[in-house]
Image 1 (cartoon, helix red, strand yellow):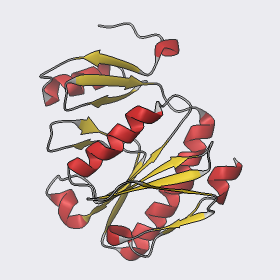
Image 2 (cartoon, helix red, strand yellow; image 1 turned 120 degrees about the horizontal axis):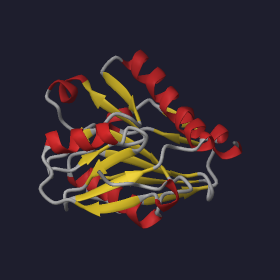
Image 3 (tube, one colour; image 1 turned 90 degrees about the vertical axis):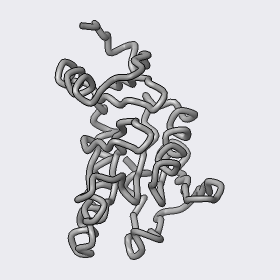
Image 4 (cartoon, one colour; image 1 turned 120 degrees about the vertical axis):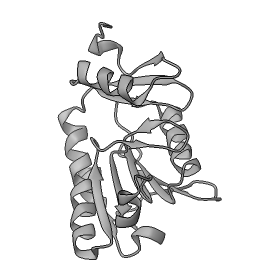
Length: 187
């Protein structure tokens, strides 16, 4: 058992070759933390979200859930929903939308949202967004509340950063979804 002080989080440990069962055991031992596993064999240990970050996550996961309920083609997930990527990584986006077909076949979602929180490292989160795309995600939004910007990640295109916007419109798999960013910016 590893003792982890929250002041040192996020923390990355090298754990190459971790099996699904070993990863699950580790998650159960450290239930107070968010855990992810990269394709390179790194175990990423993150603290629970602070209340402000958690409130922001609800501000985009709840509208996504509401839209998906009306749309009926798939499901919205929140930050505790983890996915096993084709690369072997085990990742959890802050919110996602997954079609019924992909959910049944245990694939990655078509769309993910990540929030740049105070404990996140921008470079690492950018790499995570590229990892999502490399493993089958079609569209991703990286929301940065400090800069009031959204970086849009699409397959086979350079990321596009939009600043000074109050809403972002879905496309591709989430055509018809619009996220109001005003509450995220003003919290």
